[in-house]
Image 1 (spheres, rainbow, N blue to C red):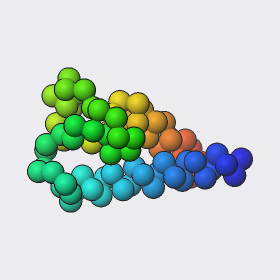
Image 2: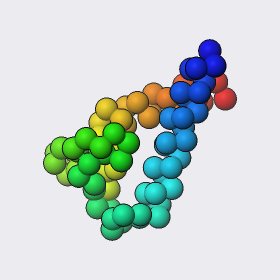
Image 3: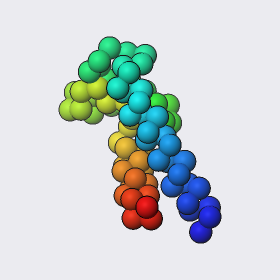
Image 4: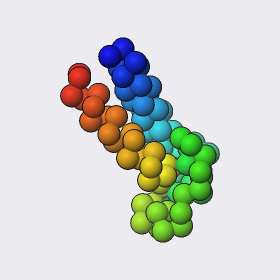
Length: 76
């Protein structure tokens, strides 16, 4: 149980960090998508960058962050 909570907290921290970086526009101009995921470093496909202006994470990491955020909210 503690391992699950640690993982959830780690993902929540990452999500918060991404939100802070996005708000600051750190490393790129506001609204400009990244070409590589901030969380895992993999390429972000052009279609995703076109569909989600200012995207900073790949689909897999976004899904993981959303899932972890929902799990965290359920425990919180």
